[in-house]
Image 1 (tube, rainbow, N blue to C red):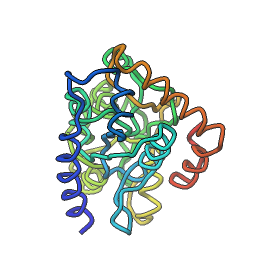
Image 2 (image 1 turned 180 degrees about the vertical axis):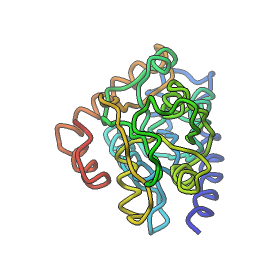
Image 3 (image 1 turned 180 degrees about the horizontal axis):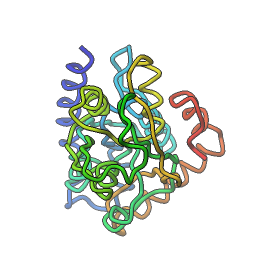
Image 4 (image 1 turned 60 degrees about the vertical axis):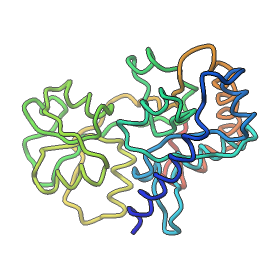
Length: 263
């Protein structure tokens, strides 16, 4: 029921967002256009708990959803969320269907070359997850020649491939973990906080974490590169700074992750 609701919601909100999409003929920079229309359009998955998901009340919620709401409030505009699959979010932003993507995006060199990023609003480590009875994989180096499953073009897929794994693309965290449990793949990589949330909901799942990345990744909000977005980036940075100082980011982190990932 929730998945059908989410799909219908995504179609409706995408249609709405497309009518509001930023046009090349519009005057002023992106922040000015957002303020003129009174709405900021944000793309996210909507099916990646606890970052974004459909709650028991059939409404989208999660850390990224609530951060997006708080930023929109700081900017003095309404929030329009458009759920979509991970591998289409950046293309949607490129095409002007979204003003921002707020989806637990880790900053990488390749992404920083193409997009401008606001200041980080979260910091996470990547976990290497296998089935509980797997004795072959203990480190990331052990992925060579193994099979993994992850969202297409995600940081996790790229990391697995860098260690020599063959990666299969899927849409959601639940799907990747199901493939691991069924033995269809050997492992998956994902944010440790997402794995912890999954296990809190499925405590009997036969899964374990065998390794995590040593350094935490910066999670930030990407936007189209260029002078057109400079003032929007400054405004988002100011909003993030205020939300951090007020304790809002910390409160949301603890609410959705059980720990503070904002520092």
